[in-house]
Length: 214
Ligand code: HEM
Image 1 (cartoon, rainbow, N blue to C red):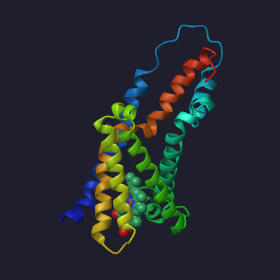
Image 2 (image 1 turned 120 degrees about the horizontal axis):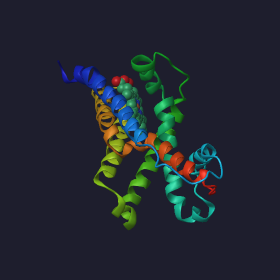
Image 3 (image 1 turned 90 degrees about the vertical axis):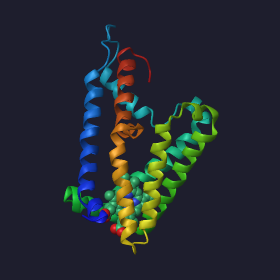
């Protein structure tokens, strides 16, 4: 079997399976641990608190805005850019249709694809520079955090190279890096894509039940 056949076939199925099962397993383990029982008398609704905790953290509290402005702006540039191009760039829509969902939707125009890629790059570079240059962020960052940023950067860079669409080898390089990213995902801090929902709502539920404003 040629390397190209391997990347297009078995490695794709392996990485997609490890991603799906690994992620489900990690979420199952986290949810099974559950919350510590709270013996206090409920003062307000835990469910409402969970919802409030989930939604309210999308923007920082006003008093913290001046300290968090940089991370918030760079974070939104990166995540919204990546989300838009992953789900709405024409080649990605076609791939999801052919290989995964059997279902397609209207893709974004090419200029919007390129703009989202540029915004995502800008956001990721700013976030990573802060991680390396800010003394506190540097101390808190693990090797795994850097690996996740660098691997995501390489996936995006190879995607930009594949934009030329005149070399089959560049498409394969992009797909290979996507496969490595999928294999790494469940074992890394990339899991925050899903776990942020659990973390925020668990804290919100605890505060909500005690009547603490979130
Ligand atoms: C700046 C970011 C990105 C750009 C510019 C980009 C661009 C592209 C382009 C142009 C193609 C079509 C290649 C071709 O058919 O010749 C492609 C395919 C693909 N991209 Fe991306 N991409 C980016 C990020 C990502 C990310 C983050 C993922 C997933 C984690 C991803 C997953 C895929 C997959 C699975 C394919 C299908 C490969 C195939 O047809 O075999 N891309 N991308």
